[in-house]
Image (cartoon, rainbow, N blue to C red; front, side, top):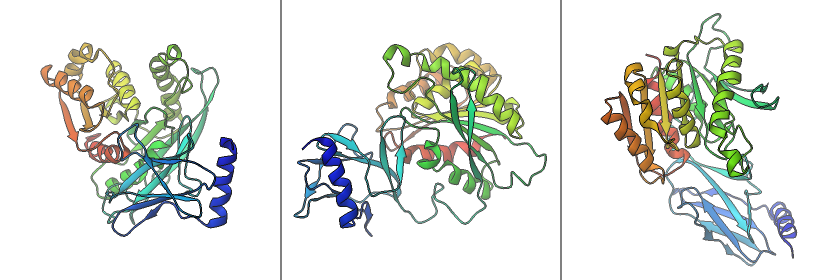
Length: 355
């Protein structure tokens, strides 16, 4: 039986047998299930596991494969199945983690309602999807997700500060909302008067197609910078009521997006008063910016999970900033390369902006 037949059999079985997956148990353990009676092997991966590892799922007499985790702390998790070598999202879970290539599934282990990323009974902002034909990218139509704070529409001519917030490699423009809950984080911080009411701009970070040959991927950094400066920022200035001044403009990102925020922010210190780096793929040559950083004195906020493979690069950047006497904040937090860490990063970074 070929792989396509296996996948079709799996999908048909799921609907016929009413498989429940994922199932969050009262003690925080989670059971995942997959109906694939003709499969010879089904593996499981969750981003709470070491990168590159999988665990075998067990098949019952009805052909349903399952696995139950240990207790998971409240957060969002990304997972997928590998059915006879084919990686796939959970067919019965409607919460899909979109990616630039392939997709996975999202799991939310609920907390007590007090975490900054959880939706609360507070005024909510709006997330809009904007489509723009890019001049820099040869007329390609790109999507940009933009959060406007509660009360934006009714605020008349009031202007707002803006945070440009970038996602990581193989993610999409919607990543910070769909997995990061950036909108709920800002809603809660604004309601608590911990953060300024701000607009958050989330563009698609792959200026060249994800998975392109290495020589083309090398152009992504510079091309994305030009896309942000020449397409995204002018559109935001035209369509949204922003101050547009340096002191009311910030830039931040995670992983690949953290590297992009560092690269763009440090080259254009006249545009940004704050630069946030969350588990960043820190670019080479950061030391050449130190003198300019010290003179311009932006807020430089660097964070990374201690279990993250990129931790040494962030720690090295923090040391360079310290040695150069650059004003900065360095946050080494528990955790790996996951949205569990990045949600907390945003919740700590946003209140520091625009004062």
